Length: 145
Length: 458
Image 1 (cartoon, rainbow over the protein chains, first blue to last red):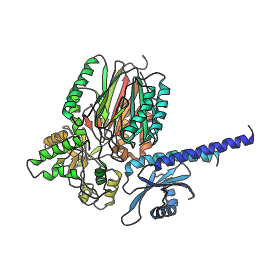
Image 2: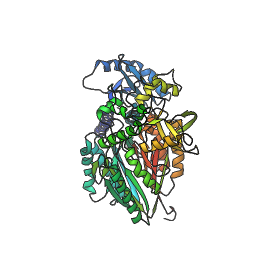
Image 3: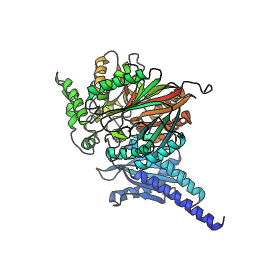
Image 4: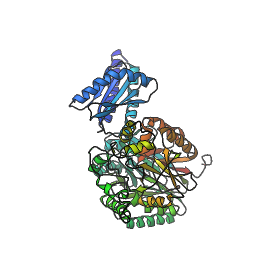
């Protein structure tokens, strides 16, 4: 096999890995209770996002807040916590649950839910999604990319 | 006897059904005798389900099919709230039945079902027989869901029918419960335990072997569907009789709840379906917190109401039997008052109330992820033997919520004990079991089939 073929194969594989990642995020974002999903690398860089087309000011407030605390949650998640939940108060009447999950060895999945979401059931889906995204990202890191 | 399973998690029910079908049929290599089909809850009503079932029908038009939609599905490799799961069984006698409008013409249909079951049992005289039931599930109209879920502030019209309001009037309580039950059955809303109670108590008294589940969609509280021979129904009862001389059917239920003996609770009033008009920290919230010794931590109430759809707290109640050792029934606490609210059939609630004074006592119980996992471990250790052929598990959606993000770990227990044995787990809103009580809540009902021959001799 020539070097060009190998590179082509590698890039096709990387593409398919990214497709898997997209489909996992799409699956979670299709729930009505999910407002936005943010996938962070451990160094704080945003890898992927899913949010409504109309990016509301409230969501912007949450995103900035998440960016500010991501390193703190990272430490906590790496020390063994399964997930971290915050109730982020946006205005006096609006408080939304925000969940942080460790996804694989190098990323954090952040999910912003509707204020009256059924968090009990959504936790099941969020933990599943974090696990699967973790597997995809770890695989991608192994092959490089 | 051979069984295979296929499961695919996806919002697109057609896609997940075809994938699950492909997986299950590729492993079977022969035509099945029965297809058991479970789905998560999907938008679009019966047409969505029937379109998905037509994919199976194209391949197996002659094979009977039964099942229901539920909160979620799981097997050894995956789990989720949306998607399809298929179990195919061969070399087993299976007969599917549909009792249409079971919820509405309740008495007549109950008699019909009981006589049908008797006939099947007589016909299968030389066979071990087990029934799988899928009665009308739980469902509320959207406006009521919004009220229950405090998305809209307001007054739940069904609250007026709660006996608690009328308890000081001597005649009204007996009517209000009946009116509530009648209206709920007529409109096909609420929890349908009451309409199914006479059927299951009757079968229970005849020592029939049965399990099953009430479907539900806990995310939206839309109506769940019952499936029979590639059609989807809303207020009907579907069931299958499984018969085999080579198999014995085992069932078991446990809740994983530990009674807190120092937290005795008063069983006082009930309402079928357990409606709560409002939970927003206003009505009776302090009473609930006091009960939990959490008066100083009001954020717990917010967590409780957010985590569980409308009223279920972390610690459900239980009623112990006369020997004070078997958890007969789970209760939910009504945060409005300091009283237990039985999410049970009216018939049962009445009986429990009558016997409550000296024979039955209610306690707060602790049902945590840890207690659930520990009990599951013990149960599967006892139930699963080398000659187990397949397993169906009907798990309460509330238990799934309690397990929460430990779900992966919880499911790995099934995998560890069952190994290569085909099994499916369905998350539902009420479980049916003929072991020691016909309808249970907050529980896991395990239905397993074992070969009557030991693995060595076969």
